Every structure is written in structure tokens, then in C-alpha cells.
Amino acid sequence: MAGSGSRGARPRAVAPLTLASIVERRVPATPWAEGDNLPWDDPDFSQRMLAEHLSQQHDRASRRTATIDAQVRFLARQVNHEVSHEPNHDDAARVLDLACGPGLYLHRLARLGYRCHGIDFSPAAIRHARSVAAAEALDCTFERADLRQADLGRGYALVLLVYGQINVFPRPDARDILRRAHAALAPGGTLVLEPQTPEAVRATGHGDATWTSARSGLFAAGPHLLLEERFWDAPSRTATERWHVVHAETARVERYAMSTCSYDARELVDLLAAIGFADVRTHPSLTDDDGPAEPGLFGMTAVR
Image 1 (cartoon, helix red, strand yellow):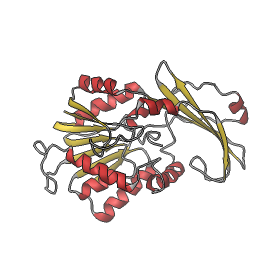
Image 2 (cartoon, one colour; image 1 turned 45 degrees about the horizontal axis):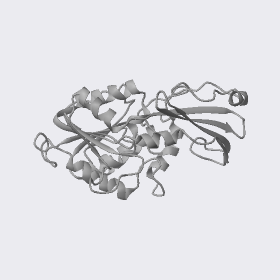
Image 3 (cartoon, helix red, strand yellow; image 1 turned 180 degrees about the vertical axis):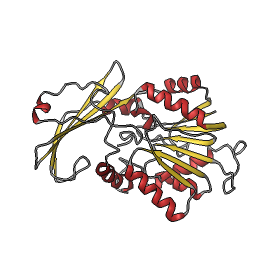
Image 4 (cartoon, helix red, strand yellow; image 1 turned 30 degrees about the vertical axis):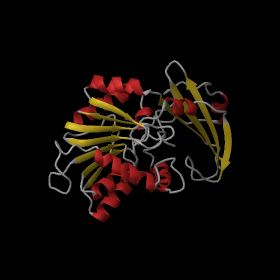
């Protein structure tokens, strides 16, 4: 589920639906017309998603431990100590993680001595992140907020927006978040961005519709049917996923949709340069420039 859960975007309110609404649904779906994202701010959904974040069986919500550990080593190397003091000092380098989820990156960076702040929209993820930080007395703070309205602050040595999260905002919102990330950095500070590849986004928008049944799942705690559809809008280069959930006991219907924008590296390099970033570089992954590319994702770094 890389990139499929912007832990900072607000889902649009879902009107009451009926079975007839499935028959009468718009095909193909119009990007952004039926909701911004998954219901990250719903307490029950966010609690179910937290279990996916913490799972070591897959990388659909967050990566597994070994990959995060390797990426944190890469991230720590991006801190410019000429403009930010060394870790473990009272004025240690500050790190901001946008769409931080349950804090898996920031907890590790704080253990290395960095001062960390994370922003996310999921109540369960933020609660978990705060709990771990408190239990270990880590220099981490976590804020539950929509990235599109949040005050990002100032003076960071490093700002993170990883795991495809930039793709799940409409383009104007993505540009605004990147502009505010630039303002949040100290001079000489570094943005680390990890977009989805164009090929991965296009693949998200292609595939046959599927019906499944389950006793429980991400979208419902009880028995339900799930219709999942995928659409690709070539003019806007946007993939849309749509889910209709039919609760078995009541026949109540809920609909969720999420759109994902496709960017190639050149487009993002030009966008970051126009915002004012310098030394914009692309990386095959956020682990090792000499290693293999990570499927479906690539890394970028840019300096204020």
C-alpha cells in the first residue's frame, strides 16, 4: 500500500449510500470527485491500519524493520552538520517527518540524538508514536493535523516526505506542501522526498474490478462485501482507486476513493528548483545509491 495512505490528507465526508448507488456509480471514476483519501481520521479505521503499519509480514502500510533501519542510516547522512549542530546537544539537529505514521523513522532518528517532530492525520498512529516516545524518553513530539493546513514550523535540518506520500495530494496541494517544506528548513537544510514511479502509479490505475467477501478487514471490523475498482485518467496522469463496502448485517454501503498523481523525475526536479531548492538529486532508493532501485519508488534530495 505504498503511497496509498496519505497520512495527512483529509477524506471527504461520505453521504449515506444504498445498494442502488453501486449500480448507478460513475464508470470511470473522476479523479478526486468521490473523496480525497482513505478515512485516516476515523478512530476505528486508524486502529485497524495501525496493525498494518506495525506488521512484519508485508510492506503495504509501512516498511518492515530491516528496510527502515537501512533508510534511517541514509537519512542521517543527509543532515548538513555545517548548518546544524551535532546530535546529542541541546541544540541538536531538528528533523520533521510529514505524514509520519506511527513514528517509525523518527523514533530511530531520536535514538541517534536528533530532535524530532512528526505530523500525521491518523489518531491511532499518533497515539502509538507518542506512547513509544514517552516510554523511551525520546526527544520526539507528534502532532495530529492535516498537512494541508498544519503549521510546519521553522529551522529544520531535515524534512521528510517519504513512501509515495507526495503523490496522493492533488497537484496544487502537493506544490503548496513542498513550498512550505522549503520554508520549514533552515538554510542548508535538506528535503528528502520519495515519490512513486510513473509506472507504479499507472499500474495502480489498471486492473479488473473485483468483489471479495471477508469476516473482517481494513474497511470494516465485521462481515462485509468489498467492490474494488481501478481507473486511469490519461489527461491528468492520475490513478483512482475506489472501494464500495457493503456491511453484511445491515446492507449499509460506504464508498471511499483515493487518487494518485503521476510525476516523472524531471517534472519534480523542475518543480523543486522553481520553489527555490538547490542541488536537487535523484536516488534509486533511500538506502544506498549503489544498490538496486526499490520497486515502484525513487528518492530525491534537495537543499534549501
